[in-house]
Image (cartoon, rainbow, N blue to C red; front, side):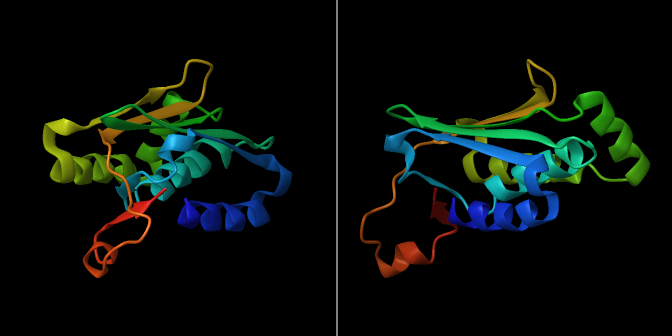
Length: 152
């Protein structure tokens, strides 16, 4: 979350009051581990493709929760939506970010994860991610510090 907050600080300078990000993080999920640089590119996509093109800006909701076995992360924006994104991605030759994330998650977790993207219920775009729940130790060992996962 620290890296994500730093990224959002930069984007707030760029967008000012046009960008609002709401965080809803379950207390028991605050020490959960996620692969490094998974959240930031997903929020970056929401800003670049959903919120950025809108004159009025928009809102991104980041929700993190867990049960006994899994960590669920939802990133939902109220931006332009799927059709506008696809049109812009085709014209710019982009659209690799979500595909790269899916490939990376498949490599890390195989069938033990869920990665879904698509239109949000109230417009905009939604990303849902479920991964196996792992916690950070309060005092990490030197070997753990070298791992590719970081605490939310």
